Amino acid sequence: MAEARGRVAGPAAVALIDWTPDQAIRNIVKTWPATIRAQRAAGLGLLPESSFDDIVQDYIRENPYAVKLPLQP
Image (cartoon, rainbow, N blue to C red; front, side, top):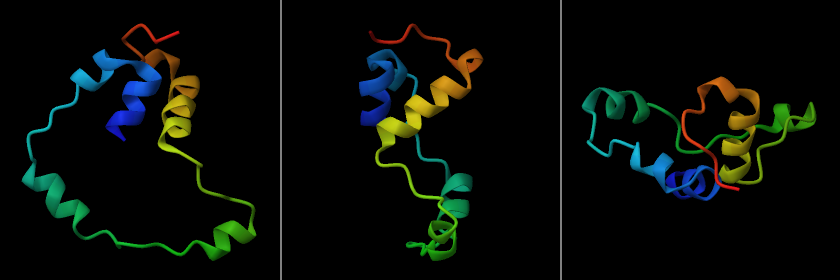
């Protein structure tokens, strides 16, 4: 995910990531399922993104006010 952020938004965007472990977040995430079967969603035409790059690009497009750094050309 961090690499996709760097490819799409540049190294300054990656430099904003705080890599300090957060036990509260870890406790939440460890309760999430390791795999998800989304057969019903797929049947409704809801398909996963093809890459993290697409997710970052979609976020930037849908939330331009949230982007505080100049984007890479």
